[in-house]
Image 1 (cartoon, rainbow, N blue to C red):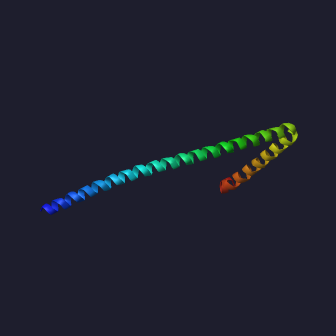
Image 2 (spheres, rainbow, N blue to C red):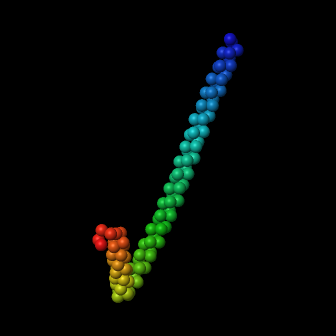
Length: 101
């Protein structure tokens, strides 16, 4: 019976050690995941910042062109508006189906 108690005590000791190791591994994995999440966030923030700067530059450039050529800009915007209106009428008619006929 003493041998059984010794084996049981060894197993319980080993189980406790394994639990400690698992806890350490879990903490290490959590720390690593946190670091990777921070890196991903920093990368995304940097890319978004670059994209926003590029959009600002392009918008500024487009505004300059529109100021230099107001008639051309107005014509282009009017053309886009007419095409969008026509597409809306066409699609509205197609999706209305047989209800309107």
